[in-house]
Length: 153
Image (cartoon, rainbow, N blue to C red; front, side, top):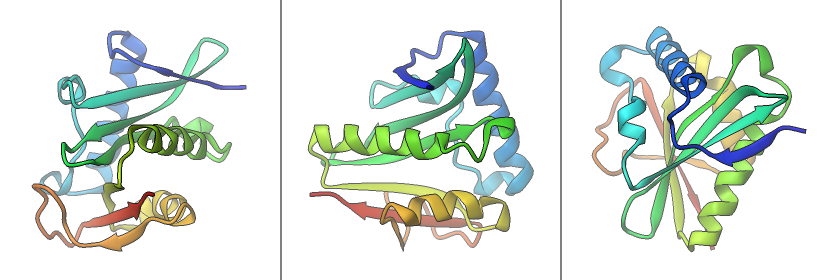
């Protein structure tokens, strides 16, 4: 059974996974429409990162950014391509949702791509009740982005 644990972003495996995530996003979206956080961006105090491990192998990651207003933003959800279809993304999303509830957040936000490559992610988020909304925070309207929100309570 995979284990989700807090990650301090110091391992070479995690650095590699974040680089793979960045390349994957840039391959599917124009650079000006990519909003992933690079490794250093994930090291901000407002961002909590978790990694998903099995038998010593890093399979995926996810992050939760505290927006400072009682809400959070899901960031850096990524599962290694060879591991997709096992429910690992679902496990990470459930972990992040539980943490958001524990923190007492009133809502969770996220930005994902609007292109076909992001359909599996959109279906996952929709299955948990996330609904499309307009841009939030510092985001601007972008035809390549889909913004989603989930009310918590």
